[in-house]
Image (cartoon, rainbow, N blue to C red):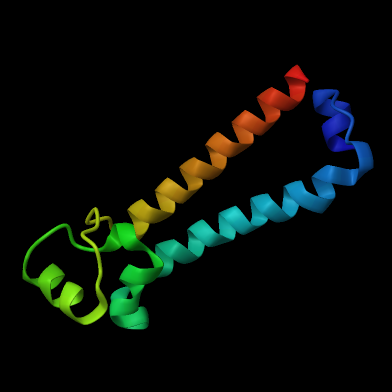
Length: 103
């Protein structure tokens, strides 16, 4: 009812409740958890879970490539990774809302 009363968008078949809200919550919690991820918890496997956190060069990358086959990353921090994930969620929501209004 909130979407229909404020945005004048009718939610046919409860798609918002079935797919929308679980997806948004998963995106928010996923970004939050990626912001908390650190090497002390996940050891070197953090770079397999979040490849962008891997170093882009240097001796540490050489060790990671030898032990785990890690590709060069983007040297992101966990906070930066969380920000990118939230940005992706926002872009997805904007695209979904705009195309939903158009159709």
